[in-house]
Length: 130
Image 1: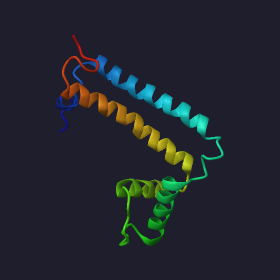
Image 2: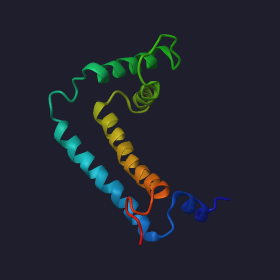
Image 3: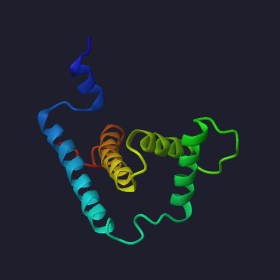
């Protein structure tokens, strides 16, 4: 059986107000990312991939064609490559949706950084409680 109190303790969520802080951090970070995405989606360079994005896009397409295991040498981050290939497999080759998923993960990153800072840094850093 799942113990909710233990999960809240491990995550550092001891009171209801802190959940509002975490939701607020996520919402603000996500809104900033959505505003940015809204501005760049009409740019002529949004769908025209170049350099590293093009390299990862082509390699993810190759993985989908030949299979998930490739014996050739890859000079880059393979976790992102497999993430990109999985997104393409599930949702199709959609640059906007892929960027949106990355923005959601980026907003979650802000929450994780807050929780790590709260847990491991001194009381003078972050949003410390008096």
